[in-house]
Structure formats: structure tokens, C-alpha cells
Image (cartoon, rainbow, N blue to C red; front, side, top):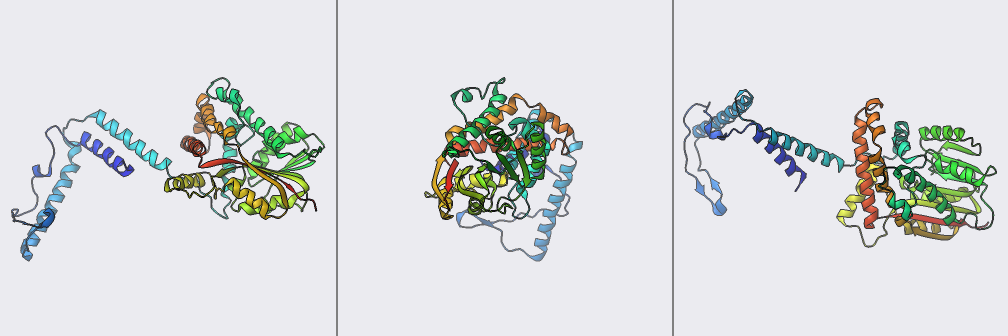
Length: 421
């Protein structure tokens, strides 16, 4: 049933509970305020049951309009005075109508994306600034704003109220280990000494790699969000790491010289890039010959077959709710890598089975521990409005799960080596 019909039924239910008394309330029971009698006129029946009044004189038309205005005026006056009448009220009907109307409005708003990408306005950076300042994302997701890598034991603990939160964060470290292993960055026997983390968030992966690879490896993380850089730097100091740094920088216009890094790492940042080819090209430019490029990113399925109208609607919501310009397929990323003319050993993979559980797991973590959200409703700058924002996030997380589960979305892994000069 269309949402407009639902809203109409809700209004009707409330109106009937308040206005309509037991014996009924009709316009025919109202005394007329207009002057003059109502002149009954015969009508002519047209084909298909359509009635048409015969032609009238000017005085008759004037009288007819006067009567209609009298009826309308009288009806409005009577309705306005209904509140003063003693009429039976059915509170159950009123409450039910109000609840259905509220749910209908909420459903309408939740189905309307609210944070679309806007070119030239740094919508991505501003969105991450807000998330970082709120602290809710870091509280639930930890230092890593990316999906986790799940085994059977992890899946079994998703709904465990005691272990769920810890397992949720542990899977993210597993993901980094698996992504690093899959990249083949040490295939030649040498670990990378200069690493670039493109779209570093609050620096979780950068710090983890800095610690994992040791003090002789220098890791640099870049992001569009000043708040993320500030928080990432704070956490690095708290952990005593001096081989990692963070900068505010546009991934499509990086300030590094050519051939700077041994490993260029992009984990769930490509989704926000307004030019996917430029994203690949720029990472290739700053990569040393013989170095490794590895990307993990949300992708949409390859076409053909073309997207159905339903699939287009689902993708549109996912584009416009979390500031995504658009998605591309894993195969398109591979084609972009080939197009640079500088990459070889290019391959892709779909890790949807390993990562899909993170979407609903993040919801369960919030169910078992909702207190920070409740508290933020009283202490944050936006007040209780943050509760509505969190509800929107939950809806989007579930939509993401369904998109990946249906095959509309895939979890893209792309790796390549830069050709030797």
C-alpha cells in the first residue's frame, strides 16, 4: 500500500475517534446558513453513468453558488465547534491512529537518504568530522572504521551479549592481517619500509601496521577530516608510536613526490572517491617501482545484466546516505589498474563471505550496549536528535547487509605491483 494511503487511513482513524459520535455526523444534518431554498434540478444521464446538470440562468447559478458557500461555511463552523460538544471519544482508536501515523512518517523519512555527496563541499570530510566528534562510532567500532574478517567462531559470538563487542573489534585486526597477507607485500622477502594508508580514518590501520612492521618502517595516513587527523595523532602518542604520522590531504591530489612508497594501502576509502580512475592513478604515481598496491572497497556488481529499477533505487539510497558519489565493480577496478599502463600482476577477489557478518554484528553490539547513545542524547550538541541519527545508521547498516547478501554489492579486493622502471 502506498505511504500516502497509509497516512490517509491514519488521519481517518484519528478523525473518526474524535469527531464521529455514535449516531453519526453528516453534512445533511447541519442547518443551512445560506438564504433561499435549495432548488432541486433534474440531471441528464450521459454515457458511462456521468451526470450533467442542465443549463441554468444567471440568477439560478448565483443562487446555487450561494447555497454551496453556505454549506461549506456551515460545515467548517460546525467542525470548529466539535471540540466543545460532548461526544464519546475512543482513546484506543486515537492512540492506534497516532502510532500508525508516526510510524508512517518515520518510514517515509528513513527511506529518504539525507547525506548525499556534494562535489566541492567536502561532504565526506565533514561527515567524518561529525562522527569523530560524537565519539559513538569510535566507541562501538574501536579504532578501525572498516569491516572485519569472520571465521565460524566469530559468527557464533555475534549475538553473545558478553563477547559480542570484543569479537567485533577483534575481527578488524584479523582483516588487516588477512589483507596484508593477501597483498603479497613481502613476497620478495623484504618488508615495506614506507607505507601510505589512503583514507586512514582515526588511524587504526596505520598504527597497527606501524607496530606490526616495526620501528624501521614509516607509515603515513591521510584523510580529508581534520578531526580524524587530530584523534589519530592523539592515539599514536598514547601508544608511544613515533613511526606513524597523519596528514589532511586529498587522495586525488596527493602532495607526495612520484615513487615514494613501498606499499600503498586503501581500505574502504575508494567508496568516497568522486573519480575512481584518478584514485587508482594517483596511488600508482606515488608507489615505487616494484611496490605493492592493495585496495579493499565496497563495490557494486558488474553489468550486464543491467540493474533493475529496484536495484537502482537501492543503490541510490546507499550512494546518498553516506556521502558516496558512486560505486563501481571489482572488474572495473581491475580495468582501471590496467589502464594506468604501469601496474602488473593485477588480480581481484570478492570477500563478501568473509566480511558480510560485520553489518548486522555492529547492530547487535549497539543492542547489547545502548547506554552511550542514550547518554549522548542528553549531553551532545545536537541533543536527542542524535537518537534519530543513530536509528538512521541502523537502517543503513541493515540495507547494506541486504545489498551484499543479494549480490547487488560485492566486497572488492584488488592487488597489483608497479612495473620496474
